[in-house]
Length: 331
Ligand code: DGY
Image (tube, rainbow, N blue to C red; front, side, top):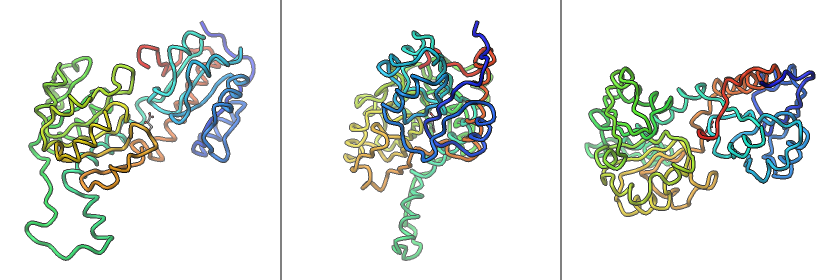
């Protein structure tokens, strides 16, 4: 049972957070903020965990076993500002008695909006059309001008039917798409019925039958390159692929080759395998919409994420169970 801390914990925050969040943290904790928002170096991370009680990192910080080995005796909590924890060695932290928390739920709807935006934008060529206008290339309407593909009546295959996947399914129903999904566990029948979803235990079988794939599973050792070249080749050449989860879940090199060879119709990518690096080949493709990892980037979600971080730190300092604790098997 964790014991309450007697004094304010020393909390190191690795990136600039919304002002409201930083101010509240200053009121509650002994905080070291990152005023100029520079990404922390490995040395800065090490120096932080040697002295702090709590680290508030984010997906740009790599917290591996080597770094955790340098933790000081007071360091007991990694309160991640974000949902994904694939940049943290959760098992190594756990072994050292360091807890990890994340910020689930509060970015679900915003990320689902962005996935849906890409699901619409790629087949309907929205970004290509917008670029045409700005570049002065629009010469007037014609019956064969800028034809894309209809979403209504098409099949959407969702990989990872957690909170975000389910939120995308609800949106897709509104667009007249039939929802198919692959998940480690089948959903409760009530949720399946609500979104009229078809469950596929076999990812391979689902891939061959859907028109659009949207990825919503976390990146873990088990999902690294879940979409291998072999699996991508199961998709129809008319299929689209959307990724707002993590770039590592699909083999980006294989995806690019397939797009170049017209073995896939297009892609909408908010994340990249070597984030933030974007393969230059993708930049030249009209049938690809690229976004700079902005799925959850709303003012509202960032403030809500900060509130979650604060609640988790408060729970820790007060000796309560951590509301958003991440266990090694989830990480
Ligand atoms: C997360 O929280 O993991 C998201 O990818 C940030 O947008």
